[in-house]
Image (cartoon, rainbow, N blue to C red; front, side, top):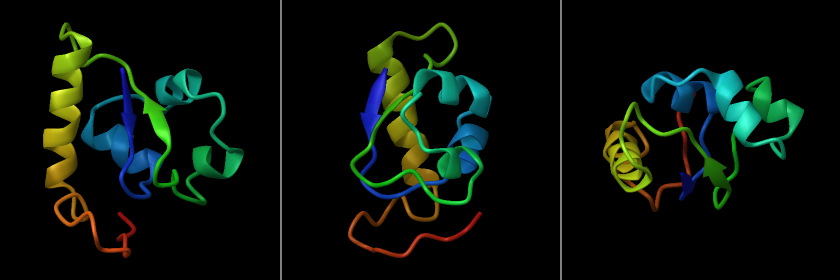
Length: 87
């Protein structure tokens, strides 16, 4: 499934909270810059990030899980703020 990120996010943080190996996310998103993959810079806002399905869930349910998880992140509740914490 694919989600459009409303704000920048670190690959390592997303992989951790979604319990996904970052190498799988890398395989699904070959266009990600090497700096993103090395966690030197964040995945930019507006990027359409491809993610693996959550367990045996379908794409729609996996996407719902993503957005519920996103809201739990320190920056996920406030989509207007431009600051992002390094976690």
